[in-house]
Structures are given as C-alpha cells and as structure tokens.
Image (cartoon, rainbow over all chains, first blue to last red; front, side, top):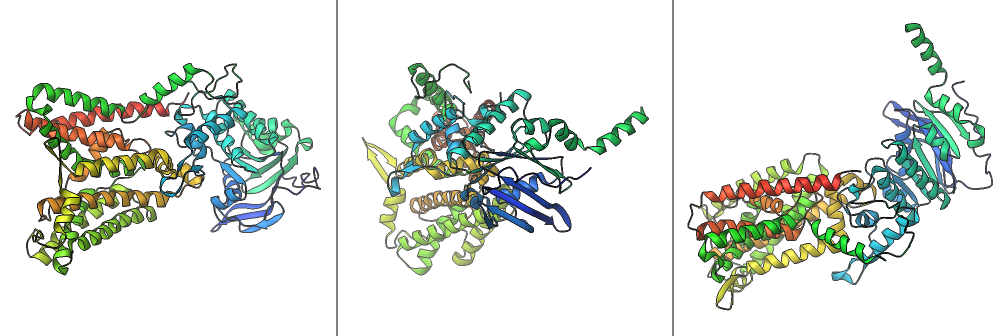
Length: 273
Length: 353
C-alpha cells in the first residue's frame, strides 16, 4: 500500500503535448540519492501539485525544473523536446519561471522596480538610454490590478506588502513576462490561513490565464483545492501519482501524512498512554 | 501605508483621484533616503551661522565646499558600492596609490604628465577590478578582502616609493610637460564674483549628477539596489550580480583616480603614507547621507550632503575658533543620529502587515 505508481496521469489528455514532462528522472549528490524515478507532467491551464514531507526531494525536483541543477538520469522534455537546462536564465528563456518562497523579491525596492527587475524596459539612445519609468509604473499597476491587487502606490517598498501579496506580485511578474510554466516553491508555507487563500486564488488566476503551474507544498488541503494532478514524493522516490478524479482529499491527506506509518504511530502512542 | 485595496474602486485608469496623487508625492518625498541628511545639514549650517560670524561669508563657503568636495568625490562612489551591499576599505590608500603611480611613471619615464595620468587611471581601475573579482569569485565578505587590499596598497605605496625615489615622497614634477594643463583640469581655481572656488567642486557635483542618473534612471541602477537589497532574489530573476559588483568597485577606483590626480597636481609632490583612515571618512559620509550599512538603500545626493556636513563641521569649528579636537565629537553625534534614523526607516520599510 506504500506505492501505487501505476500512473493515472497522462490518461487525462493524451492528445496534448505537456509543457514540461519529467520521465523517470533521477538526481544523485555523490552517493546520496536525492531523487529517483520521478515522473510528472505539466499541462497548460492545469496545476500539478508536488507533495512531500521535508527531505522528500521537493527542492531537488524544483531545482531541476528551474535549471539550477541538472538531472543525472531520465528525460526532461519541454513542449515535447528533450532538453537539459543549464542555468536559471535558460529556464526563464524557455518560459519556465520559478517563484521561491523567501527570495521572490527585494524588500526595500519599490513595487514597480521589483516587478521589472532583470527585464527592465528602456527608451532613448545610447548614452542617454534610460528606464521607461512611466511605462513601468503604469504596467505594474495594471498587471497587478488584472490579478486582483489594487495598489494605491506602486512606489512603496515591496517589503511593506504582506507575505501573500509579495508572492502574488512575483506570480503577476512571471505571468506578465510570458512564462508558460510557473513553478511555485511552497508559496503558502509561511502564511496564515487567510493569506494562503489569497495566494491560492492567484495561483488559480495564473492557471486560468493558460499557464501550466507546478505547486510544491506539504499541505494536501491547499493542493486539493486547486490541483489537477498530484505527485507524492517520499524519501526521494515517487510514492504516488494521481489525477484529481483518481483520489479523494482524505486519501491524499492519509498518504501525505504517512499512510500506514501513521497507523503504526497511532498504535504505539496509544500503547504508551 | 495601505497596500491592497479591497476598496470598491474598480476603475482601471491610474490616478483618477487627485487626492491620491498628492499623498503619494508627499510620501515619495518623505521616503527619500537623503531627507534626514538634508535636515541635518540645515541644522549644522544654522548652528555654525549662529556661533561663528565668519561662517556665512562667501569665502568661507568656498572653503567649506572645497573640504566637502574632496571627501564627496569619494563618498559618492563609496555610497553606490554600499547600496550594492559592499565595502571598500582600500578606498583611502587607493587615492594615494593613484597619485603615486601617476607621478612616478611620468618622472621615471620623463613622459608628458598626461601619460602618467592615463597609466594611473588604468592601474587604479585594475585595483578596483581586483577587489571586485576577488569578492565575487570567493566567499569571504568584502570587509576582509578589501582590508587585505588596504594593507597591501599601504605597504606597496611606501615600499615602491622608497625603492624608486629613495625617500617617502615623490619628486617634484611641476616643471614637466603637461603639468599646467593637468593642473587646470584637476586642481585649478575658478573665480566667481571675486571668490575662488576649487575645480574639485565641479568634479564632485558632476559625479553626484551622473551617479544619481545611474541609480534612478538606468537598468544598472535597478541592479545596484537589487544586489544590495536581495542578492539571491536578484540572481533568481537574471540580474548579473557579479558584473554589477565589479562595476561598483571600478566606480570607487575612478573616484580614487580623480582624488589622486587632484592630490598630485595641487601639491606637486605626494607623501606615500597618506590616505590611511580616509576610507572610514567616506563610509561615514555615505551613512550620514542615508545609505544603509547593510545595503539596498541610499542615494548619491545623500552621500554628497553627508560630505557637505563633514565639510561644514570641520571648517565651522575653525571659524568658530574652537579647539578642533571637538570635530570628532560632532562627527560621532552626527553618525549616531543618522544611523538611528536609517534604522527606523528600514524597520518601517521592511515591516510586514
């Protein structure tokens, strides 16, 4: 009962090419097996959730998709083309944007400067080429409004926004710069209940805008609210892969919480008490 | 500091409400990093205007501005570096190195002094590149790396000068070709309305203007704030972090070159032991000017005002005919006040709701 890796994923839409597809991917750090035999698919307009406990290999997986690390075995396909990402920049250029939990934004910088950081639009000729500040301010305001955030002042330091709002700005930024795949690393981990709800709303908004989303989380409730596919990781291997109609929230929570291990633990604790 | 607005204003157009425009421009002014230093500068000016009668004369103004400019030429690039999250402890002796290279190259090669000036520019920029590359390629903090450069330069300044000139100072180059034109550029005096102003004031103001333009209106400026305020976040969105930092160290080197040439062409001979301790003065000016010591926040104008406060305090004490020993005390007070103000600013900016 520990593994049921007979994937039901892929059956959902076999005629479409996945935006990102991992097939039997493994990653080793020296003699440590960080990830082994993991497969997942990300489709446009769908959310693929990756669930796992600490040390399950979630961050290794994210690093492979984001181009920070390269996989050692298996294949990574982007829009059907087998590839190997050399750097985060390359991943960005291929349309894969990653939003990290802690380092999404620079807190002391104004919202509009953060929004365009790394891809600043400019105007004018060579020695006087300058930032198109008006355009940057206007676009930031409009794009955030489109995601449902109405900022009164895009000049305020982004650190004055709440954690949830900062994540949302980072998501809006990725959408604006034409990302096809959005990778979110534990976007709700440090947030309260209400703020998590806000972030999940924007994750859904990004999905509705036609992006493929990879949502990394250890919260099955959050995952089940928005997810279309669920990949469960456990100690570096894939312990399950399901589509939404193939699993219930209770079952997902049970597997996530440790499944049979949890039952054993319950017995032990009862005996102890 | 309101953030998201659940306010029922679904108007897509920006600034439909003039009231909002007013509040936001007022807030923008209050959020400027140099605000504290400008208030401080006015306070210092009024203080000495009251206690030293001669302080408000035009000739005194010229003296104060000259003192401010010699610090400001370095304080501005040092401030940019600090906004980028790094220090340069070698900045003080680098000025001396730059002057020594220029003087000794011209003298030994009996070349036009302009050749020495150009060689000095290349050598000084190379020192900046060395600092930047060492920092970005290795792990230790810039404090330690530039402390190493500081010690090496201090030793080399004395060692090479003694080796080549036989004494601790360079030979006079005032009779050499090109000296007078170089003096015009780096150390002349411009008379305006009967009062002589040193040309370093022009260099200083030009540097402030260029640095402000870079910081506020260019892509590189955005990167400088980003590498200082969140290096990993900047890297994750594709900002060339290493190149930005190396560029900032080259900026400090460029400032050191201007200061060094001024030193050489105003005094003709250079003492090889000079410059030690000045690096802290530049850092203090930048901090008084509103730069956060941890990076990511500050302005070039602020650093210039910090240098101006420096100039006013150091000369004001002389005009007030007080014991100059009090200079350091005033400086300490200014530094503490500025740091407390900045700390408060940052806490407010980083506060999450």
